[in-house]
Length: 54
Image (cartoon, rainbow, N blue to C red):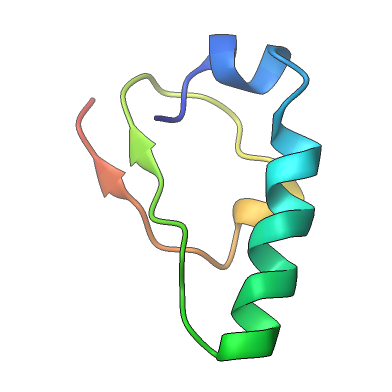
C-alpha cells in the first residue's frame, strides 16, 4: 500500500532492491502498488503501474 507513511517507514529502498532483483531473475512483476493516498512517487516506482484507490 502506497502512502506517505509507507514512504517514510524506511522499508521502501530495501523492498525496491529485492523486487527488482527478483523481477530481473524470473522476469515476473512481483510488485503492484496499491495507492491509498496521493503521494509523490519515488523514482523507482515511476515505471510500475499501480492501482489507485484514492
